[in-house]
Length: 337
Image (cartoon, rainbow, N blue to C red):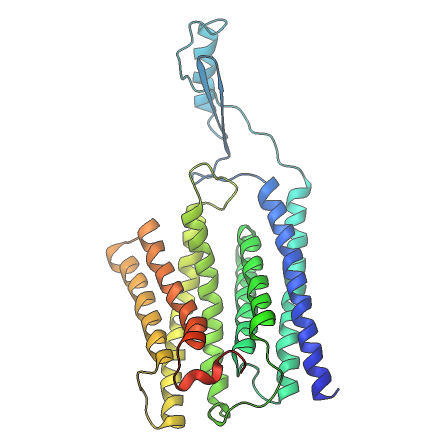
């Protein structure tokens, strides 16, 4: 195939990945919406009321069920029952197709990942270089890394509850790249003609994908209310976010160091207070603060989540905002190549 044909195939595969990720999102969302509800105690809960009696449904509380039933029976028709008495009953079972929808979503996610990977490979073959020399290619690669991080995590533990949110994030990211960032396949500026692009940018892509999984988990942690039991539990969300960041942080550290080494080779200095360098370091500092606070001060819950989301916001500004709104030596990654 010619370079033009490979470039066209890459663009088609990106669009295919968007559709597959959206299909996966629907499957995951159906399982989340109609599957078994979750609480932070691991039980399924529902609350109903009757005149003079407050019934709180919480699976797994047989003792409460017995005492509540006794309270109601002692009052005959309910006149003698204590107001606000608790009655525990079993919640309805979710439909049998709900987990199957999640499995179908998982299949679509894997096929979408293959299409996303194919788009990166064919783009690289079309241009004859590592395929992340501009913002379009970089965002496509980050979406690939984020979905891959989710699916690899799913192989080790069941985190399908994150699937709908990771898929919609990847689909929106690819859509943003196609609509606003797309550039024709072609050569890059001389500063990028180096083996360092395979080292520095690859590490940044991998870390950014893991940080994205952590960021999605953190956002869900904050929006999950006490009664919003269809979302994953706060304990699970915080656990997934922390593990993703623990894995991503040393990779991001390596990316920052490799970037300094590349800067010395390309521009004759390790550090020049370029906006991209500054925000990469700010991102590193905030994520380091999050990990330090958890390890030494025992920060958990909302406070720790807010810190990691501040770090994630710094990451997004570094990856997108700096390239669009600020200049500098890294302007080769700006919109339009």
